[in-house]
Amino acid sequence: MDHSTPQRAPHGTQHPHPHDTAHAMDDQADFLDLEAEVLAEHIASITAWLPLGADPRHIVDLGCGTGAGTLALLGRFPAARLTAVDASPTHLRRLRRKAEAVGAGDRTTLVHADLDATDWPALGAPDLVWASASLHHMADPDSTLRKVYELLAPGGLFAVVEPAGFPRFLPGDTPETAPGLEERCHALLAHHHAARVPHRGADWSSGLRAAGFTVDAERTLTVGVEPSRTEAVGRYAVSGLRRLRDRVASSLTAEDLTALDGLLDTDGPRSILRRADLGVRTRITVWAARRP
Image (cartoon, one colour):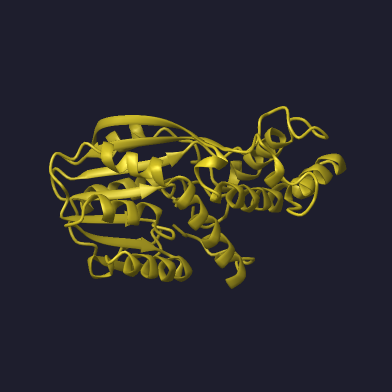
């Protein structure tokens, strides 16, 4: 649900970047699709947990990506209309195909918009606003929170879903040729993000209250998915580590880079796909905030 890119992340693209080509956007969309498949059970559990009272009639998904949350919400609330907002046409095209494939195309409205813009497009007065792995990418999250407050119908719920960070795929003492490699990569990634995504990992409770919300509930899920649950785990791990490599390769030692490339060589003897200890580990925190 968290995507170490300058654009979106679980999930919306905000700021185009010079190196974001059509190929890069397709690659990001592929990663999001794999993430949605691997984490589907956990996303569904979040939608089931939301303290709504009554089923929403209109939902807005802010920074929808390729639709992991969108599809879960459409399935959970079959009578609801959903407006999905993202700045990536690539993501929205994929979401359109998915919604139509599950028979929900007529309930889904796609809106191409930059959520950092001063004025948002007309999005109605939804009963539920969902923002998964997108709020920390906003240039001014406090402004976004105030806009969501004004957007929501009185009594409506705002669900903020945030991953703890980029997922881990291997135990800390692996690989054998470079124990602790993944944690060193994550430390470099955190340094890379410090100036670029300063709101990553924020506790949104105080910001939500400052915007006028009451925080009804907060929940943290510990995610652990083994390859036996879905074969997509392996493809997700390869895609994730490739994206991680793109960000940190220039700062790795020669030994670490060789070890990482060995994990990414899907035909090689050290491929991550050959490892019995492969899995997906992360944490997801959800805040359920209500407009009084």
